[in-house]
Length: 272
View (cartoon, rainbow, N blue to C red):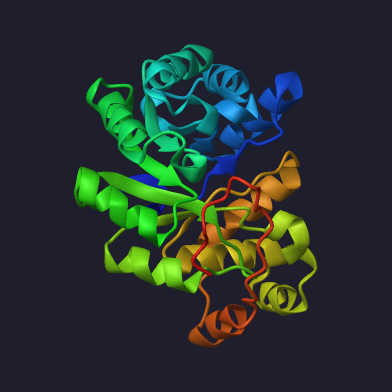
C-alpha cells in the first residue's frame, strides 16, 4: 500500500461511532478488505473494538498501523500518562504506532509545554512508535518545532476535504515536510453527490468519494474515511488506483470554499 512519508499508510479507517460489537464487526470487515491503518481515540470509545477486531483478524501486529489520541481532558501531567496506559490496555497492545494530541488545550488551560513534553515522554517510554498532533494551526506547529525540534512529530491530523482544502496550512506543512492527515475527507458524505467529482469518477470507473480521496492523497495527505458499509469500504479503497490528470486536479481544487464541518468551541484559531 502507498504510504505518507513512508510511515503512515495513505488510507486508513476512521472509527468514530464504531462502538460495541457492531463497531468491532465493521472494523474487522475493513481489515479483511485490506485496510492497514485504523484510527481511534480515547474520546471515541472505540479502542476496545479496534483491539478486538485486530485480534480476530489474525493479522500480524506489525502489519496494522494503529493510531490513537489523547483527549483534551487528559492533557495535564497527572492524567496524561495514565490515560495512555489505559488506552493500551483497552486496545490490548504493548504500544500504538502513532499517538496524537487530539485537541490543543483550550486557552492554554494546560500549559503547552506540559502536554507536549508528556507526548514525547510517552514515545520515549515505548508507548508509541511515532507521535503527532491534531487540530493544530500554523502558530502551534511553530511552537511544536521550537519545543521538540524538526521531525519530532510525523503528522497533523486536521479536517480537510474538497470543500475545505486549507491551503495556508497545507502549504506551510509542505514547507516544513510535515504530512497532514485528513479527517472528514468525504465532508460527512456530501462529496458523494457532487457533480464535478461524480463526473470525474465516471471517467475512472469509481465513485465520487474515491475521487475525493484520490485527490487528497495526490495533494500529499493521508486520509481516514469512516464507513460501516462493506461496499463503501471497498469503493473507498479503490481510490488508491486512481490517477487524476492535472486538469482534473484543477477542477477539484476549484471546489474549495473554506467549508468547515468540525468547529467546536474549544477549537484553536484556524488559518483558513
